[in-house]
Each structure stands twice: as C-alpha cells, then as structure tokens.
Image 1 (tube, one colour):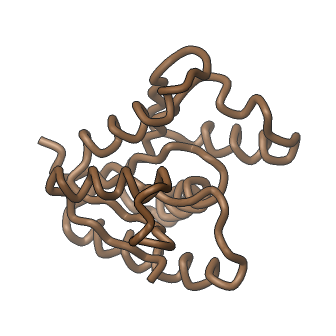
Image 2 (spheres, helix red, strand yellow; image 1 turned 120 degrees about the horizontal axis):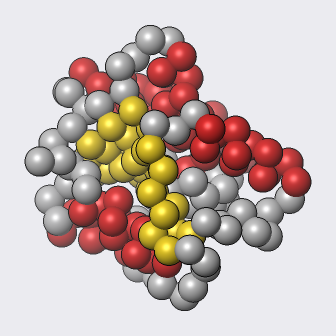
Length: 159
C-alpha cells in the first residue's frame, strides 16, 4: 500500500563537517528511491535534516521528476519559537508541498512522537541522517529503530 513512499528522519542539529557528505548522499539515495518507484516523500518539516531533505525534493521536482512532497507536521504552530529567517524558509518549503497533514492543532508533549510514528506507518523506505546509531536515547534513534522493526528499508546517509 505504501510501497512508493519514503520518509525522512534526522537530527535537527548536524555537524558542519558532515553536511556536505549528507547532502551528496541524500541526492544519490533520493535518486535511487525514485528509480525503485518511490513517488511520495514524507517530511516532518523540522529544522536541520528535515528541511534539507524537503529542499532536495523541491529541487528534484523543479528538475522535472514526477514526485510528491508531503509534509506531516506535529502541529500548526511548529515554528512558533523559530527565528524570522527560519520561519521564512519553512513557509517557502510548505508552499511547495503537494500535501500538508497536521497531527494536532497546537503543540503538546506527544505530537512529535505521533508525527514520527505516522510517517513510519505510511512508508516503505526511510532515508535517515542517524549520527550515532548506538544511542538509544535520541528521538532520531528511537524512530529509526521503530522503522526497522516495522520492516522499512533503512538508508542511513550520515555514515
């Protein structure tokens, strides 16, 4: 049912010295997914990796790729604490989306976890930027572990 869907999961904060390789690897793996029949890419819209991934999908669409960008957002006011520049980039990315799904109206303690679970439950592939796979305490590690347990093909581009 979701064989043609890939979600993105990654850290909000990425080491400067790894960003170039993450972008190069992301480009290659998105191309591999498209070649494998993926048409829909789900993104959580957070700062950091999510927005890098969304920007990549927007660029691919502008290059003529027949793909969709779907934002699954934890709440309508996700950007409430962000800077003006961060909000501008976020809203520009949202304007490029083919679909936007909100988990809840306003932020609450569970909305990010519920967003992550929704993305995994609606995907067959997971491109992640998991910096420390052995760390079981990070939100990124937990959701990648959940994706693995649910049979998603995990592609870690931060290695």
